[in-house]
Image 1 (cartoon, rainbow, N blue to C red):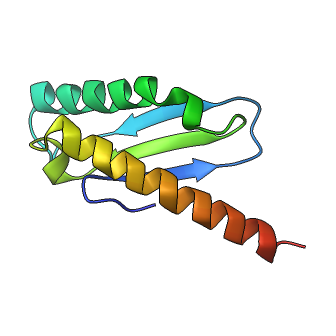
Image 2 (image 1 turned 90 degrees about the vertical axis):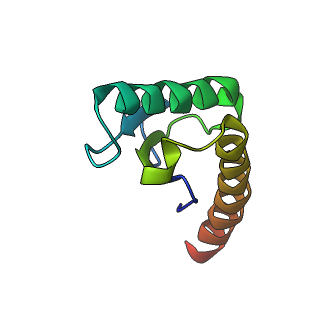
Length: 96
């Protein structure tokens, strides 16, 4: 799922719910990259109950993630949850 500040990849049918974060050197130095990971981690912690069990999630930060406000990141999370819910229901209808 592609949002303005990050991209989320997920894999279903796993043993447990897991999260990973990737932040390229293009984003900035180590201090900025670690801040981006902490901010994304806080979003995951805050919304952890909304993620499906048995799924692995990887968050790939974009350049604008480093300078985005926390409220912008939360808005992108909402876009993800709405889009993922629609995509999951569409996928379930396609698989037979």
